[in-house]
Image (cartoon, rainbow, N blue to C red; front, top):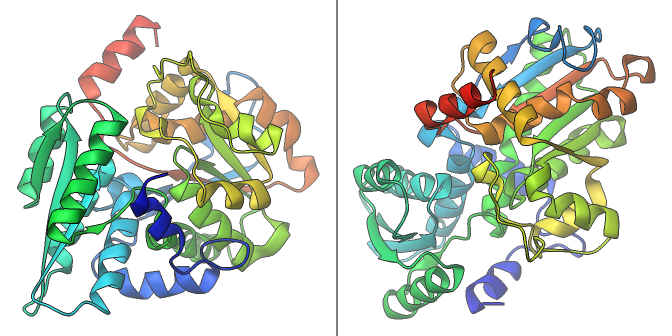
Length: 365
């Protein structure tokens, strides 16, 4: 385990989990006025005509993090991590660094820019693999961050980030294991619960579906929902069958990585990261279930959201909708069991529409 990750695990760690509901509430105050309070949409027609069943009579609520700044929930965690550091920082220029080729890279770049003040400038360096898409590189640069390119291996990215920390004193912000990042992601459901109460005459969600990859979004919102609603809410994590490390870990009761022969070829590329030592205990202790779905199911669900909610989500966000449409979900959580109001987090919208549309066409969708 690298030194930076060990340091992050020692920050704000409670006896059982690395964050609490209070940490999430504090994060909400820090990011208020900068991060968007993303909308909640409702739809019954989205899940009617289900490929596995007819309209099930449930009400579905969608938290649209695809409309967050930088196009994903990641901005919340990055902003909270930076603003937390600024509370104790002494100086005029605070460097931060991470390694990422996806949504966290863009999130940290913009969060650094927007968290800067007249007194302190935050400068971000993003270590990216040399095969990262040009559109993502351009977005990171547009937000004012410096990019350092390395070979496309985890070892190369970690080594370069280590070097930058050692030579510049930069603060390392892990995409999913940093407790302050996790707390920031938990603000999604802090808003979601309140918004659903406003839309639903004070009635709470009975079940929430959350996509899971590295686990920052899942663990932050598991803590939030258990803190707000206790055990009366069911929490189901959604994962591609091709990237099933979380489900396998959950079933085995121990943290597992991807199988050695797994080529990580899922269309839901935002969920390729595995759980880690901070996120795993929260998932293990607080989740009710993890349901996996096929690549075809993910693409069908993504297309449905495009067409019916008119939101251009990425397939990683479609995974949660695919779970809601699955036969396994309806068998386990029928309306007759008291599950009437279901929330789904649409985690991001950074999608290559032409590429995904071509994949949909190949399947005849």
